[in-house]
Structures are given as structure tokens and as C-alpha cells.
Image 1 (cartoon, rainbow, N blue to C red):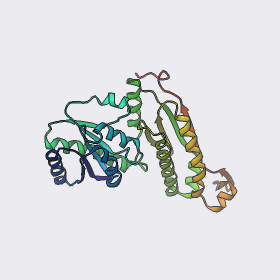
Image 2: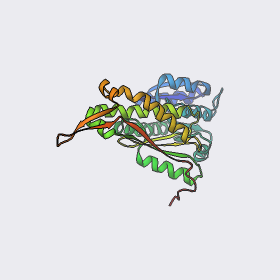
Image 3: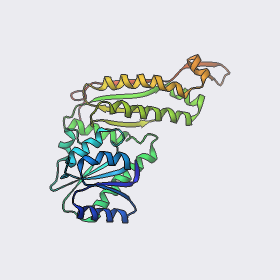
Image 4: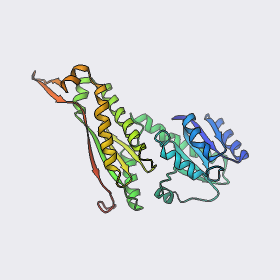
Length: 280
């Protein structure tokens, strides 16, 4: 995802030209398409930070195009702006699995599209700057849980951490620990992508702690798949001696040498959050 790029999906050539000029003058690189069934392919190839989609597109309407983008792990984190002839209830769309960041009601002023794009890009730059993974953090996760409970949108909640991560950091160094975090983030995207639903939320809370929200009934599938793949791929982050021994050796301050197991994932699942917590 490139945070200097914007994809515009607009069938009205005059409106598209106005947005292209405004955003290009602001320093953004622009790609365009005129059909809804072209949006996903364009987004995968162009890798924009934000996609602007008109609701009224031929081939596939803008809402369906946005749904497709949220369905794929590679495009799920792109910012989405919907252009609509009248205001759309975004909360109702989210209940249906179509999660759109913001909207503009036509007609709008050229400066309005720039303001929306700048805001979404700033959000994504902040995430990229403060996180190894590019996932949202604690505060956004808390807001997401509150929103789901308020609107009665149930989900499974997974809490994930890496056992013996601290020991691995001490033995191999913090750069190696960062690689372990990136491995977990990649596996999370792969496993949740296989669910075939856009209703996925992943947060990187701190260090080796992650939280994942998935559709009700899918949490165990995600947890098991994540653990299986982690156990297979984590071996590649160890030296051959540690792989053969099945553990790490660490010398204590008093001179004693202790052995610790290889890293493993811990996954705790709350199957359905509705009725188990109360939103204050």
C-alpha cells in the first residue's frame, strides 16, 4: 500500500477530472477506472492508500466494489471513500459486512475530496509509523468492540500472544523479535483471508499481543490454523542448533544456564461477545 496513491473509480468523466486535478495538485499519484468490476484488479496492481468509489458504477456498483476490497487481505486496510447521491447509513452497511471509512454526498466541492483523502492518509501514516504490523492499536480496537456491541453485531474475539517471546528477544536480539512479530501479522492476514468475509478486524495491542475479531463461529478455525502455520514457519527463525535441541539456552546472571522451549502461540477465544459484556 502506497500512501501517496489514490485510486478513483468514477464513470462521470467530468467529476473524475475535477478530482484528479485537485488531488494531483496536492501531490498524489492517481489511477482511475470507470467500472466497478475493475476496482479490485486496479487496487491490487496500483496499491493505493485510499480508494474513492462512486456508488453508481457500471458493471458492479460502488458498494459491491468496496465489499470486494474488504474481502481481500491485500486491500482490506485501504481507506474507502464512497461518493453517493444521498447520505448513506454507514453503520447499517457495516452490519452487512460493507465497511466504508467515510462518504461524500454529490455534488461536493473539490476541496472536500482532498480533505477526506488527507485525513485517511494521515490515519494510515500514523499506523505505519507506530507499528511493525500496520494494524490498528488498542484505542481503535476498543472503539470497534463498543460499536459492535452497540449495534448488536456479534463476533468471536481472539487474544493472541507468543509464548517465550521475551526469551527469544534476549537470545537473538530485538531485530529478530521484530521478525517474529511480522511473521504473526502475515499469518493472521493469510488465515483470516481464507474465511472469505470482509468482517475481520485485527489489532496489534503491544509487543507480541494481538486481538482479532471474526464472524461468530469462525474463531476456532482461525485459532487452529494460526497455531499450525506458526509451528511450521517459526523454525525458520532459529539457528540449526536450537532447532535440533528443540529449545534455547540462556545464561543467567549467576552463571547458570537454563533451557527454554521454542516460541509457541497462545490463543484464547471468546465465542460470541454479545451477552457476555455490557457496554457502559
